[in-house]
Length: 280
Image (cartoon, rainbow, N blue to C red; front, side, top):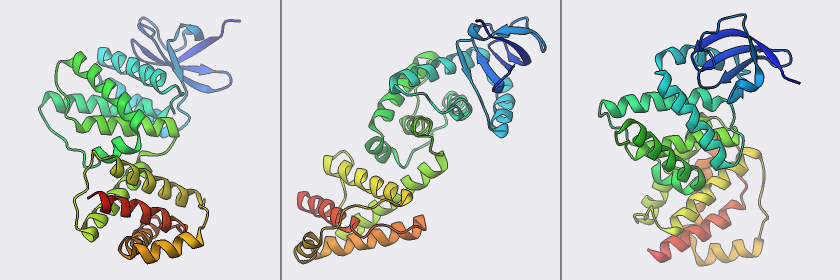
């Protein structure tokens, strides 16, 4: 049976907010969907190419305020990108990406047109931590560059990858950026204490970054790893520099996260550090 909704607000020719019996306000997106329509008009639910709810009133307000400042053709293009991202990731995206990525891309395109360059200090870490999101972000940037005819700075790939990761995992960008900053800090401590320059494209570096990320995630969730007392004694004896550095890293994590970090993490960090030192 066809669902008929009542339009609450026409945001532009392609986006309307309609009243749904169950979900209250629903955002409907489709080419020409709002053309010649006004508040109070009925609209079939299945005429929309994409529908989503913005349950958070603040996000809905941000979205409503954002749209008048974005060209409708660009908005339609961004909606196409969101569908592309969802298809490539094979997962339904959290709806907050409609606000966050639309806002980000609109300003990123404006910056590119004005030749304003923004660096991304966590680019290598983002690629190592979220390889699938990074590859999809690369494809998104290619599509954007083709659409506007202007090259994007490489750092934008990392920013877009973070938005994708946030939408797929339902983690806030604030937490993701905080953890990435912590990982970057830990890497600086490792380089300073071992007197070496880590190669960002090296497989051992990627393994270290992945492990640090998992250790932070485990600490955040309160999970632990299995303890190996015999292994601990061996590593402490054979690799004292890396073992002591691993403890230092654990303390930094605990202070930054304000959460306990499982002491068994020291063992695995020691192995990663020793591998890095040996290969250097």
